[in-house]
Image (cartoon, rainbow, N blue to C red; front, side, top):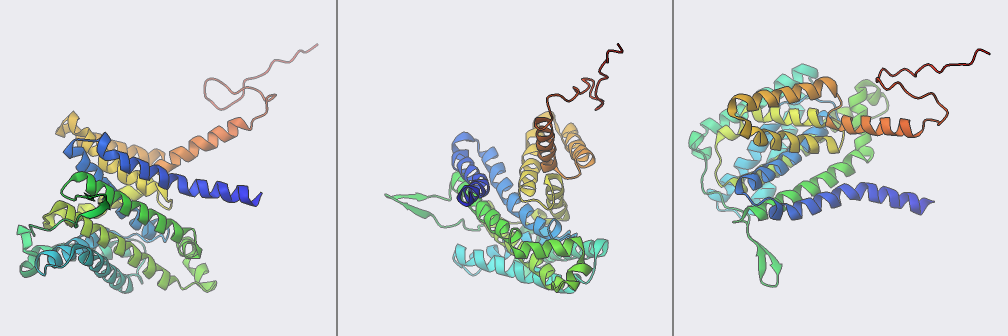
Length: 354
């Protein structure tokens, strides 16, 4: 019994990872156009950003609106180190993550005494400060001119004289996909461990969590730091893929879009931010064919409908369908049939009065 249960749990936890790996490995051959390959790469970056932000918003219950700033910090740190100081890409990659994490920890220490919309405004102000630094620290960031000539990651030997060439979009798909899978596995281990229990306790009732001996401030700082670290690493990969950085890539709308990905997908779930990031990255590009005058109208309407009718996000749709299927499969055969009109009331069954 135990082995069967353990096997089922292993399959349930490993299946999403295996499916994602297969999809990523086949994506370059299925999607051959350079435009859509670019969309896939950006979607995978957004998956990591949404998952890491969900650790703060969904699991810890902190309304943070400056996540895009950590992306910019990581991207510019990596770009400056690889272009100005000629660092190796992977060394700059890890330093970018550490720099963003340090900024996240500093922001947490300063602002996490605040709650609710006060915290949201404080983190929004941090994003404004970072953008202004990127725009005006011309000696380092080159300001509006941006940083060109950012090197790609070095080619990775695969054996038999072949290598993963990052001059091709397919290599970036593999790298971004592998990075997203690793982040998903690590975040899943966090939320399914006692660390995740502590974060959820902070979200549900911080006062009660304190009474149980949980160091709520430390755990909130932990969530901020881990999320910022993941965003910083993503920024480094983004810089290596784009080859050029401009401050306009890290405006406030980036943070709001990431927040929408978490909420639309389903905050406080593992798969929700993944779905939200994929949908909110791919759908706007797919709607380009309907024309610019209708594209954003349809996009905004779809977001509004999802939030209104599915407050638990897109994952709530699947949960509702599963719940309805289970309830219908458990119904007894001698129960009165349901009304075909969909009112939810059973039809009246005539009874012989004699």
